[in-house]
Amino acid sequence: MLAQRGRAMGPAMRNAFILLAAFAAAPALAQGPLGTAERGTYVCELPGDAAGAAGIARPQENFTIASASRYQSARGDGTYLRQGDTIRFTGGPRKGEAYRIENANFLRRLGPDGEPGRLRCVRSGG
Image 1: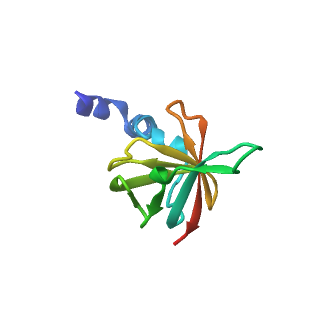
Image 2: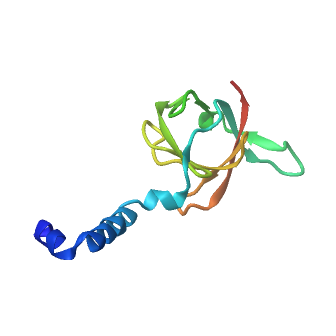
């Protein structure tokens, strides 16, 4: 049926239809360009308070960006995807976790609602 409509539409209308379908099928474009995270080990902590340490270490949350799409952690290895200023673990034991890139060496974990949480991770090196 679509093929019949395509012949009846004419080339200009068919091209417009194809373009509209492409935009509808590509919501990831609105989230920013694909990229990679800085390689290295990210050491994670919660903020401390004025009466104690500046940060409360959370070593179980630490991870290493090993390559352009792979991470390693104490819980196991997996894959990640960077879109714009967001890193999302897409495979492995941390699948579904997301972080906002504050700068090249500083990440903040995002909650299920997409809002920044308290956990912060700082790149300590390669």
